Image (cartoon, rainbow, N blue to C red; front, side):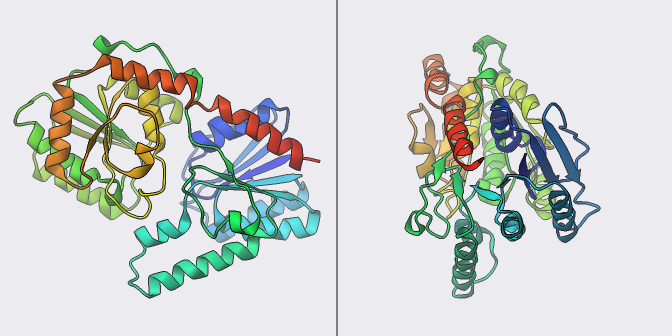
Length: 368
């Protein structure tokens, strides 16, 4: 049995559940899936038991204790964990039962600290160094490392003898459907993902207030989870202040399989990221989703997006006027060949099917 454990992702997270767990199940392994989220979703099924603990009712400390009890009663052969907060639990169980550990690194955590921490230098630098030391201490117990982006290095995996296995968040081929430009909503844009200031969402909304003067029927749909409650209030206040209620809709997180219909019906997918330590490293999953769904793509000119062979209209990060100009130019000149080119790249290269072989090989090695 394989224990897949997460403490900060929705149960139906596209990487964890739809891609990795399904790839594991396809190999014939059984899975016990632990999640910590305010959710009623039960993903139990053939060869998978899903246990979710509501984070609005249970503390993280209690969650870890409950997971530990479950795994002591039924020790797995492999623990596949998705956040560094879970490393102490995994190491404790490894010492007791000789369990193998796969550490799945979604983010570059030093970059997250640098981006989100309110501490000033040198305290912020001290916090980053301390985090790296903690991770190094646990890594001697880790058997394999998965990374979601080539820029993720954390405490220096290669220097410690690891060869991290790159599993980029490419979409599943099953979500790729034939593009029909005529079926898309006129002058429509979509943003899908985490909703936070560093993502450039405020700048995106401000750009709509410029665009609407030339294109009165423009619409922007935003889907995702807010990183903070305060930013949620700030964003709704901004929409109200700019009188954009008829042009901007802000929607909660929805199931991964459901987002595709909204992606397909919009003309443009936007990646409005501001420049910071995190956006300089992490590859946005939405890039590949937009490509697969047949959206024209507008993105700030951040390095991770430029890494791929895709046709994208870029703008200067953080520059509202530049973003508005790029959106207007794109809406006035939708190039179907660019959209088809991007989807073909996902079909042939940037798809999850390529990663299944890597997962199979890794589990064949550690599951003994």
